[in-house]
Amino acid sequence: MPKQKTNSSAKKRFKLTGTGKIKRKHAFKRHILTKKSKKRKLALTHDTLVHKADEDNVKEMLNLK
Image 1 (cartoon, rainbow, N blue to C red):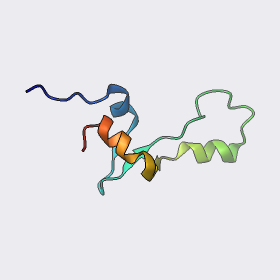
Image 2: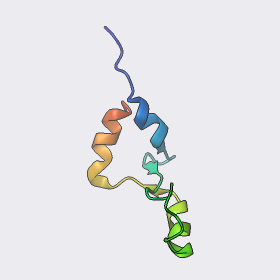
Image 3: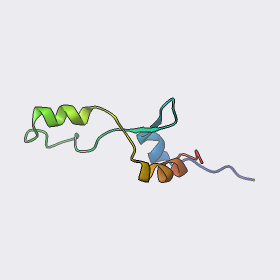
Image 4: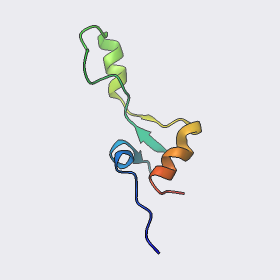
């Protein structure tokens, strides 16, 4: 039986933490940064966790279920 493939875009965007949560980066930090405040840009630098409502979809893309 063939193996199921991992979604290539998902494996580049998400990482698994030691406790099994899924880590992600913030959006809106690529361009048009001059109009954004320093505080806002700094906040976007830090990683965050995937929301609980989206966790199942991401896990399915990463073949974790």
